[in-house]
Length: 155
Image 1 (cartoon, rainbow, N blue to C red):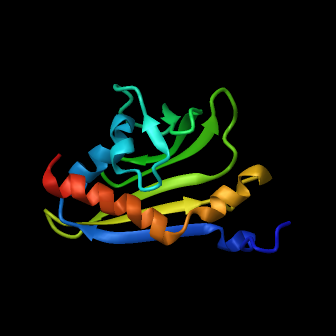
Image 2 (cartoon, one colour):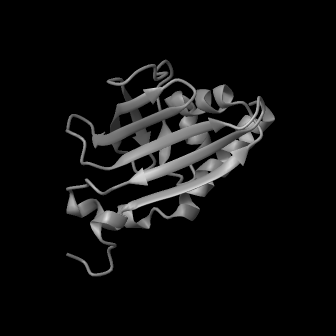
Image 3 (tube, rainbow, N blue to C red):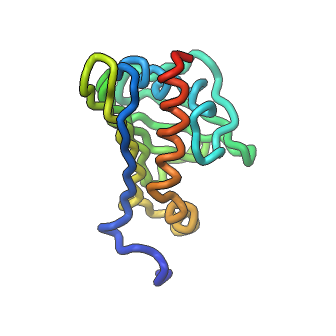
């Protein structure tokens, strides 16, 4: 095991901020995979076919990455306008154990606390550890900030 990696119990990264937009509008940007490349702060997502709006646990949406690979994202948590989480996997394979989660907490009709989490405590594919460790709160905040620009502008 690489000594530069955090202990398993610490392999969860979170960032959050308040966004001046209703939770339903923010969630619509997250739950529509075709919109995700617009706010991806990691510049990792190239495109997703339209018409994949997530509506429940068990949905699987596909995404093309900037490196040309294709991902299938298995939705494991879903509460409309509140929470969504998925486990990515290479196309045709089982998820490797890392999870992306978005949680929205309305503070008022027009402001929402947005929390973004990357959890790699269950990641079993050691070839992914260096990339997983690269995800910091600052990188997650990059996605939240880009999402906020879209949501606050009504785009």
